[in-house]
Image (tube, rainbow, N blue to C red; front, side):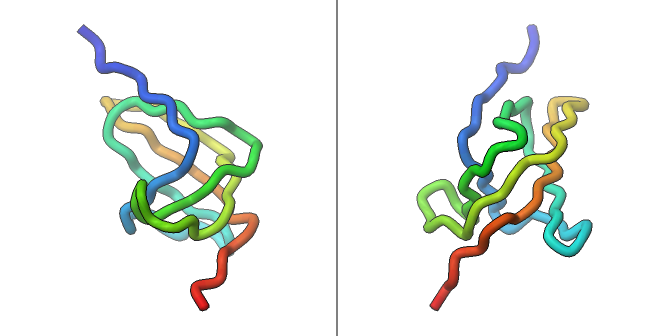
Length: 80
């Protein structure tokens, strides 16, 4: 029996993102998750938290019941 697929419409980092470029980040999520590619979506630290900005997912990889995302921040919401 395989693991279910989850469809996500925002990126929730829980503080686990890793910077891999100036505005590019990598994030590892448990389970198999599907995200929209090449369109801006909200990025948040927690599901119920405020939006930190908008990002575009550049790459999704699935391996061993884990989803690996590479995304680029395109707009950042001010915390002031």
